[in-house]
Image (cartoon, rainbow, N blue to C red; front, side, top):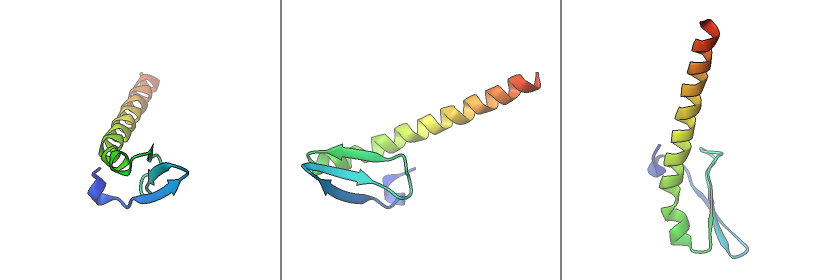
Length: 68
C-alpha cells in the first residue's frame, strides 16, 4: 500500500503532529516535527503490510496443521 493511495488526516495535538488515516485504522504517527511525521508514514505502512502478511501466513499454517 502506498501513501499516495490513502487519505491522510493531519492534526496538531499539543506539540505533536499526528498523522492518521481512515483507510488504514492501524496507522498512527506522532512527532514534534511535521516533516518527520510525514516521512514516517510510508515506512509505517510498509511495516503494517508486513505484519498483515505474517498474520495471513500463520493463519494458513495453523489451518494446515488442523487438517493434518
